[in-house]
Image 1: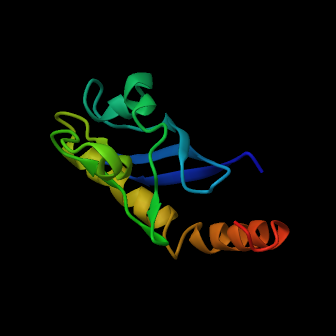
Image 2 (image 1 turned 30 degrees about the vertical axis):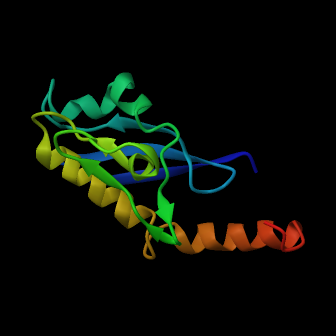
Image 3 (image 1 turned 120 degrees about the vertical axis):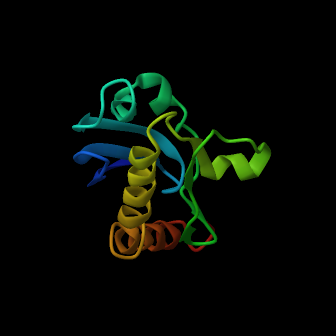
Length: 133
């Protein structure tokens, strides 16, 4: 397994946002995110479709100590180093859309979303590696 793509959806300001988020082989590192459908305000919330904003997700981490530890930050990420790995810039002028993205990420990668599946994949990988992972 080199990467896995998860369908995501959640409520924005004006509509349901639909997209995909890809995680790398460690099942924690974001390879990419894309949104293919939304009804957010053009030039504001619809910026979730902007490749520049989406590129800011690459290399970010979803989990810390087995729990979702990620935040879309209003006003931009101001920390450096490891702390910045769990944060991405919010979209200026689109606070509710940014909150919606944050909420959908926490839901889909939490215990009611894909986390049980991800945990099973991790256990399978650990067994295949002889418990050395």
